[in-house]
Length: 315
Ligand SMILES: *Cc1c(COP(=O)(O)O)cnc(C)c1O
Image 1 (cartoon, rainbow, N blue to C red):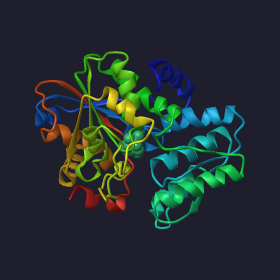
Image 2: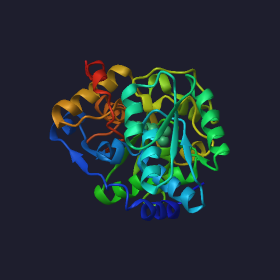
Image 3: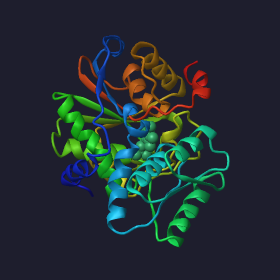
């Protein structure tokens, strides 16, 4: 398991690349939620999502160790983050994406300097391909969450929150594979364990919820939730024990609730956030978190939205 020191080290390692993102507030949103709401704005991060934190911490280590290439299997924020940081550090990145990958996402990876290779339709095909490409070319496969350096990088958000919202009561975090929340849990619980951390999943992507209930890693069927960053079908081997050790609570939100949260944040706060981040606002708005007049920090994990799909998301 990683420690607070690993996260402090990560913060130094990535300081020249990542932004310290702002905390945004809205009286209207706080009123709707019955609590004091603070949004941690990772949609304003480099590449538009927090994934650059973990990717930078990891890829810097790879370069230091003499790696000549990195690969990843993600058409989403992780793929963009790996492409961006590899380019910045002067090594090539090949990002393996599905045959039917969204053209705007492929364009974003290319714009960050990544090479794109299409392969299959599921991660079961993509991950072995990305690993093989790394093996053949003296490179390293960069996993999206199940890796200590990735987790430590994501955990730097927790350190920032503790400094930026000094007397926070509850921090609400989206859960995909669990890299983001396990980093934040480590940062917060090893600094100030009285701050509660609550995880959120879409109802149809409730793998961590079920795994916590059963006490062991439990997989679900493939899901099509609009929160595409949270579609992982089981928690990671590295992330799950951390989640199990430290999490205070985990709640679920519906697709309609996610859309409404996204719409409110856009309409009232003029911030475009992606569905995967809107789950934290949805959980707070729709009473999933039992609290009144508390200081609640909702982690807004990213803002990458294909504008052609925007009307689907907020209708
Ligand atoms: C990847 C991602 C998540 C989930 O992070 P995990 O570390 O997989 O739990 C949440 N929101 C956004 C925007 C993401 O890109």
